[in-house]
Length: 54
Image (tube, rainbow, N blue to C red; front, side, top):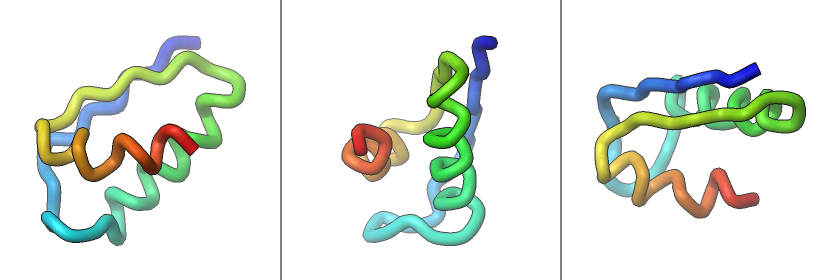
């Protein structure tokens, strides 16, 4: 299955927490069995790039 995750905001410029952190953790789990695509602001990409690699 292909899943598109759309995140329209980013709450912090220094760290991830709360809902953002939860969504990224769940998407890492889903990516084991599904193809995941992300759409979020550039700041969100910069902050989550290393998190999503691991």
